Length: 174
Image (cartoon, rainbow, N blue to C red; front, side, top):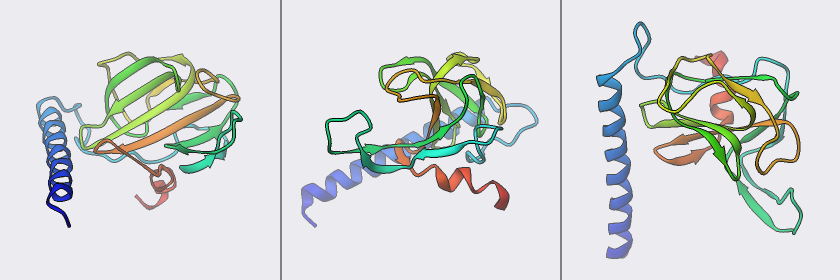
C-alpha cells in the first residue's frame, strides 16, 4: 500500500472515531429519561402493508436518460398520508426541504447511526427535537425527486450509507 493511500485511510478512520466520540459525548450529556441511550435503528418505519419499489445499490435511472445511479436507501410504496415513524430514539438533525428528498427528516441516534426519511407530504417534528422510537415523524408523500407516493428510508453508519434491509428486517431477532 502506498504511503498516500495509507494516510487517506488513516484520516477516514480518525474522522469516524471523532464522529463516534462526539455522538457518545452528546448522548451521555442528554439521554432521554427511562430509555436506553444507545439503540440501533430497527423495524419498519411504516405500520401499514407496503412493498419495496427500489432497493439499496445501483439501479437504472427512474427519470430517464439511461445509465445507472446509486440509490442510498430503500423505497417503500405506501398510500399518500400514511404515518412514518422513527426506527430508534434520537435528535432531529434536519427537518425540512431537500431538493432530492423533498420534505425530509434526518435523525442522529447518538451512536454513529443516522436515519433519513424522505419524500414526506407533512412533517410532524422540527430540528433539534428529541424523538422516541415509534414516534410519528410525518406522512408519506411524493415530494422532491419522486415518481409517486413512497417513503425513502436510509440508514447511515458513521456517515456512510448502509443497506437498510439489515435493520428493517432485523426486528424479529432483536
